[in-house]
Length: 508
Ligand code: NAP
Image (cartoon, rainbow, N blue to C red; front, side, top):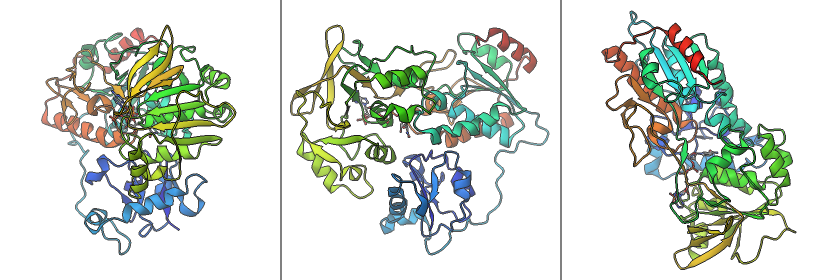
């Protein structure tokens, strides 16, 4: 029978650590782990024990013969990962039978010397990166952890970034929520480090401070009209439908028939999916009430995804693209404006991104014709195209773009710029303007003793939720090594004083 990993895989590799026959790849030790879209179960060595499904924090693992409709392709995708060339197969191990873990000397890399008192660590940010760091410290050391978040609700991108129609992904928040009430944790919400309290004040009361503040801003296109009414960042749109307190409930107007989304990463796919989904399927989710009301009033018939790359190397992942094909009452169409697009799709290797589009309709779209309101809603993938200008008068009317051969005008009343997030400078920490990150060595902030970074402010804004687990392990490992080496600055005040100070300064 075997099990298979499906769309919501978060890559945090919890399943890898519980698999008794080591049949899930790539493992965090393998090079491919850093770039894989998802993990895969080898159907030939899986012994059907289901330990991985029990441990999966996002309900992504199912027995192959009970895969839900729309997820059946994952049986083949899991198997196909192991059907590789001989050279590549070396990385996937011996497949002649169960691939039991080799016995070796046990490694206790989180154990501090017995006479070591509990460390006091502050973590700034309660999103996935901060919570994986907290989990590591709480499960593997006696550390006392102060969790701080500028918002009145904990969760970061799990709460305000994951799309509401991905409840399985949001479930990882339940795992993290357990740690918010851990006896060695103190939680301070509505406390902005740099505004309500200084980094020096936080540092003075702790042995170390871990910044897990993510990438709070959006990248800019740098084209004329970018700030016209009707041109929004997808970051704001995502925050809007998730009820983020920084975005006004009336920030989005869906009275247009066509929306253009710039970029074709997973955020672009999230916003496109939400815009064409039947609002009633979202009614039972955590979507903000104002967003649900606007989606019910929505006139949107068509969402155009404008990507500058071709179908085989677009930024989205295969599982998210596959999900677009299975949206009820929604058509997916490839704009066949360039013969290279069809050629890439037809010639794609089976595991390639473009192969997902083989059975998707192709059409040479005439952009001078408004979307047809008598047919189903649709998403149009327009590859090999770059925006040049957001055109209009007071409001956006169209997006001018180039496809290399010439220019085109795509009429649209709303444009969402889904071209990536960007980290912002943190008071008291160095900042690399080019990457929007804090310079560090294995998580230790360069030139700032006792300060550490984890997540997108450390690595830049790429990688899903689970990528933060390995990232946090590296940072926590560095912090503990520094503690043992005696290089952490000693705190000058105790925890009680900090908690009193934090309560006084909190805006909650
Ligand atoms: P992303 O994956 O980096 O995609 C950004 C997109 O914007 C790319 O298509 C990029 O094109 C395009 N772009 C960048 N600059 C541009 C410009 N000047 N003009 C035109 N296009 C431009 O970023 P993201 O979508 O924000 O996602 C961030 C991370 O979160 C990713 O790792 C993503 O997988 C993850 N995420 C995952 C999920 C999920 O699993 N469901 C959901 C949301 C986000 P190029 O590729 O040509 O640079």
